Length: 120
Image (cartoon, rainbow, N blue to C red; front, top):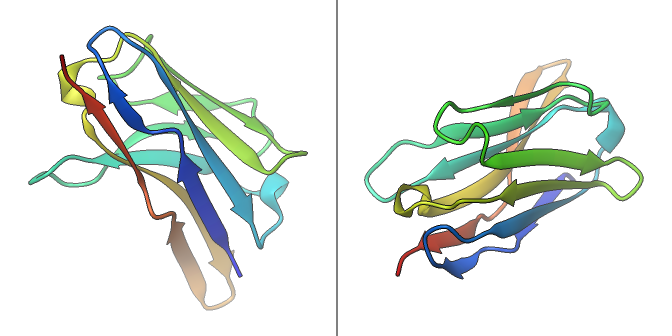
């Protein structure tokens, strides 16, 4: 079955860096776009970064442009999110997402999330 497992979260000071990893299984990884979302307490889940299946196209939320970098290794079924110059407002649970299209319609799959806390 489709599985996404995030790791790499933690507590970091403002201005610091973290690298999140999403390990995928159960589907043909190289055929699907992958996204990172985040959700802070009391807020809706929002898109952070997107990478196309072949890795040639990426997109970022305005709030993280120039600070975050998404990448993928299709051979290792892994997507990375490098987060630099972290700010307290980046504090959230970060989720990996894939949308798979079946004959019955598209279905979103999510990992369990990894907590990122930016605080001094």
